Structure formats: structure tokens, C-alpha cells
Image (cartoon, rainbow, N blue to C red; front, side, top):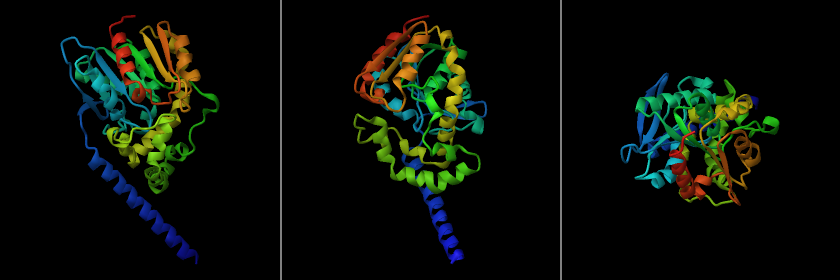
Length: 317
């Protein structure tokens, strides 16, 4: 009886493992690379670059958050910048079509910031307005702190910048980010479950607004359902609290204009803990709060974000 039970468990596990591979392969077929690959130390980063619409046009660097990739921001903001600015939307290391580069240690937002800076250097970009969403707030502020000449202005959208009470993260990030356990968990449980609840998860991120019906496709979210990407995402989230806890005391060093745009109904990243806090620390900061808006302001007020970002791009410290 025991052997029979073990056999059934083994067959179920093998089925999940196989199904996980099919999910990832289908996502890659559905969403092939749409941009270019730039060589950086340790591998390549994938990004989409619209190029300069005219000589001297400002450059907007879009950095996506967790459980996402470049297309989330690019799909809604790039059309608003058309003819007005160059837009570079990058897949953070280990996400979308970018290599993880240094492996698990690339969960460190500072390492991610350095890798993205290297990609910008490879493109000949010397100054940007950085627009970062959610988890990417940690890497964007690290980039601005350590390479201020590169960041002319910083726009934070529902961005993580400070430690939050209890260090709490969703339970499944813990096993997925753990060495040895992570690959097994993601393949046998995490990805199969994630593929079944994908639409519900998207709805939760957009709440209280309704998610666009085509969001999973336009934002290419199914690329998250690949083992290496699924695990990299969990590692990023698990490393976040310690990083912002160490970095938060430095925000007074930021001399460039900093704009935080956050929804007052955001239940994923607290506007009070993050956006209000960093604006109190910087010398040239401004906070825009959006009544009734949740965690995806770039999908709700893209025109506002584009307008404010273009205005900031002409300012100097």
C-alpha cells in the first residue's frame, strides 16, 4: 500500500514537472524577445529602446516591479512619450528575457542597479529620468544615490523605499527563494498553482480598479511562469526588506527632483510607509496621491505620469 501511494505521488510530481515545462515553453512562444540584448558583466540584459525622436530629447528609463517585466510599463507609457522622449524599458536581471547574471546574489537591488547602469553605458546614455514601479523603487533609488550624474530625475510609482513592519511577505516567497527547495517547490506547486490563479492575481494587483481584459498578454505576464524567472522573482522579494532597511537613511543625499505618485487605496505598498516617507527626506521632492487608486497608477493615470516626467526631465538639481 505504501509503495502504491509513493508511486501515485511520484506520478503526480512527474506530471506537475512536465506541465510546468509546457507552461514555460508556451509563454516563450507567445512572447518572444521584442527588443535588443545588451552585453553587461555576467551576461546580457534585454530591453526595448525607442530611440531619440529628435536631437537632445530626454531619455526615460522604465524599471518594472516584482512579478512583472518591461512590457508592463512600456505598453502604457511609451505611447505617451512618442515624439517627445526616448524610452528605454528594461527587463531586470532574471526577468523577461534578461539573464540573471550573477545568480542568487543578483537579488540585491544595488547589483541590479549596477547592471542596468552598465546597459545604459553600452547604449551611450549618460542621463535619464528614471520611472520605477513597486519593488523597483529600491534599485532606482540605489542607482540615483550611487550614480547621481546618470539620474537627472526620479519618478516613483507606488514604489518600495523603506522597511515595513514585521518584514512580512506572502508565504510562498519563502520556499520558492530557498536554495534546493526553491526549484522543487516552483516546479511541483508554485507554477502549476500560479498558472491557475493568474487572472485572480492580476485582479488583486489592480484592485480596487478593474484590470484591463488583455493585461496578461500586453504585459507578457505569463513569462513569469518559467522556473528560473519564478525563483528569481521570489529571491528579489525575499531580499528586499533588508536592503531598504540599510539604504533608507541615505535618501537625504538625493539632490535631483524626486516625484512619488501613489494610490491612496494601495494595499500592496503602503503610501504612508514608502512614498510619504521618502518625500519627507529628500530636498527636492513632491508627492502626488491618487484618491481611490490602487497599486497600478501607470495604468490608471498614464497621461499624468508622462506629463510630470517630461516636466521633471528639464529640471536640474
